Length: 178
Image (cartoon, rainbow, N blue to C red; front, side):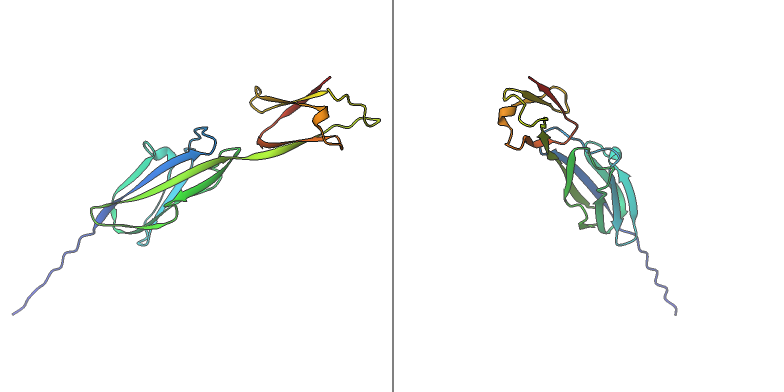
């Protein structure tokens, strides 16, 4: 007598969804650039890179992928940067999660863009020293071209300097009027 045993195995599949949220510290409604890259890998050798432009309403879903442990990494490179802002990526970025049979593993990733600030030091020099009238006005014009701040020379330090603090980064102009 002879007995034949056949074992039939099938691969288990599940789903993976990336949910992307974007915040900005100054409520300027900054959006994640469409060129931002996300690399999805598994302990089973799966690898795929997608861009944010492939997302729909902030979500990207992979269906019927082999079960296993997966990691999603948002590449924090020049593609994700916005000029004048510092980027912090938080949530499930670069964390392993299990994709189980007939289930969906959710990766919630948040980008927070914080406005960059700096300072501008204005120095007034005259020859001979001390000839600038106290009522001389220096007007600082912000990069947007519409916001201004006036400072009188009487507000300057004894060394002829005035420092504007906490300015959003950008190109400013200063004009002097008597």
